[in-house]
Length: 121
Image (tube, rainbow, N blue to C red; front, side):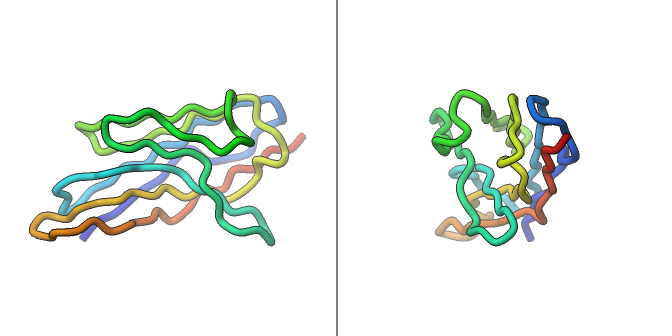
């Protein structure tokens, strides 16, 4: 069993900041990559930012220069620092991790339950 638990969403004014956190737990052998996706009403889910093991982050063009992503490899966590937030950043944000479970040979994608981010005055 693997779980991803997110925290940190909420309501913020335009120009403000939020920090999302996600912790992976369970029967984990290794985590290849972790990242964040978002889905706004009526739109497809899209990649916001991702970070592979030992790599630097990659970002959607719409958030470059405003968002940063970081991992704590010892704690199996990933954080998304969101600055200069805009109304168009409003969405449900989902944590994603590509995990190899103990005793398994291949990685699978796991998802958190989602956390709402609303940017509005």
